[in-house]
Length: 194
Image (tube, rainbow, N blue to C red; front, side, top):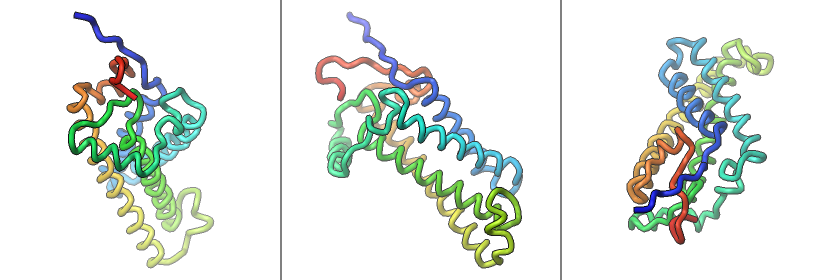
């Protein structure tokens, strides 16, 4: 029996970014206002990671670049339908649904952090304090609602993402979570992967 070839797909930056983002978002979500200093620090870490990921999405390795996993809505829809019928093609990098999820998560996380900075500024702290301090209780309450919405929406997206990873792992008999730890996936054989 022939041993399967392993191919490095996820570079160290992508893997550290991914798990660092998981940890920072979890800390921020769990601490909320109970441990405000830790909550704020975790939010700054999320913002820094997103900024680095945006740069790496332009100049990084092949499968880290946004151009490698940007698909049309029709392509994403077709992929999701094929997934429902358990016949989705295997992709060495991100599949169309995974690529769309990355963009959604980055966007939602960015709005979560920016709205959190706005709340922090309205409360008289942080880099936006000059613009938002003293803006009134109504504005502060509205900003808090926006921040909470995007934090919860991000958590929803995380659950959808994890479900997608599980389904994709089962369809292709490949542990995608482990690949995000060690960086390797099964190499392609013929029509095995796109």
